[in-house]
Image 1 (cartoon, one colour):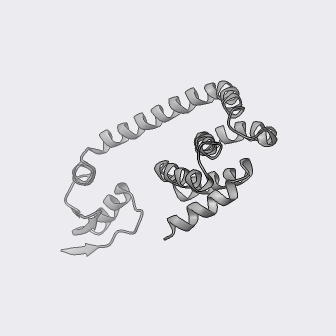
Image 2 (image 1 turned 45 degrees about the horizontal axis):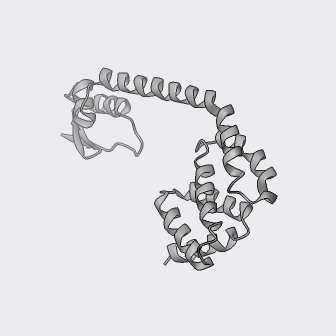
Image 3 (image 1 turned 135 degrees about the horizontal axis):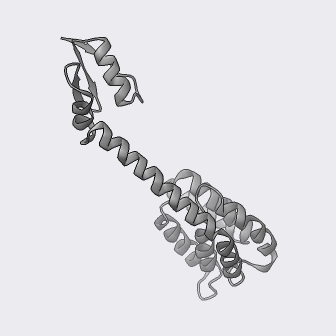
Length: 182
């Protein structure tokens, strides 16, 4: 039996078509051997554990749920803007509040839905803690930052905001980077 290769990123429908065009044959797809004699539902079940129709229904439902969540979030944005601006008044140093107020709506409408706003407020609250010396603050922030579970992009956003919203922000970013890269 001929063995065919599937290309990276190929979907199951295209893999099935390739099997049919090259029949009789087989090919490995995500660690599963697919045969040209199998039906589309057998292939979907072998690779994904559900038939093609069940898979498409799952995708439709996920898309519907996502659309509802996005709509619900968008309707909350005016209240969230107000809430973040109020919360910042007790955390963000006064000289940075005008810029904070300006970017809150932008951050809420971005990919992370304002996740970095919460991160900044948490970290800056630690930087403001007058009961700790500077090194204790930096170390507490580093631990907190690592616990926030950032990707490269979200870490970059948080670093950028720390530098912008607190006098110790630049020093904190350098501290975190120096210890994370070790």
